[in-house]
Length: 162
Image 1 (cartoon, rainbow, N blue to C red):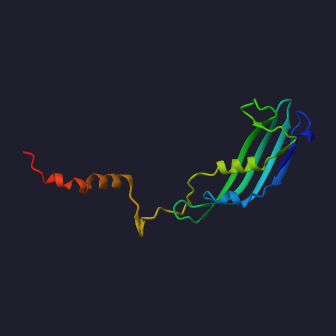
Image 2: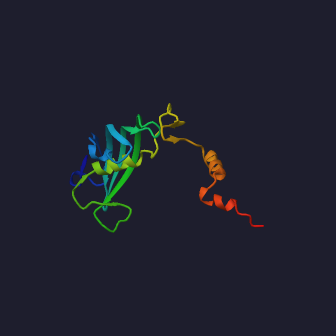
């Protein structure tokens, strides 16, 4: 999605809609597997010293279940505001000196930032145990750790200090 600043009229909102195609390479390093039906509505308003873009993003994120690694559908509806300035001195705004602003990377960043770090399907449950592992509550772990005898110090138990 692009915004051409020279085509905007000062103070008058301009609405646009577009479906975004998300590149495959962003899915390799996270639990996000796919983004489907990514639709963006943008209202752009140009002011004297900045551009305001109000985004309404809907998408269907396919994520890995944190317990089972199976696909989980996560519908997203995100509303966000972006501010762009031609001045590098504006710390609260994105610096964009060009006439044409490409919004796709900003939109993808907003979507990725709104996906939870841990996605769990409502029907999933934490496995009890398996080959080479077992799942303990924190209390059970602390009890086991407390009762465990460190074999490196066992010889000291045999010493009679009296």
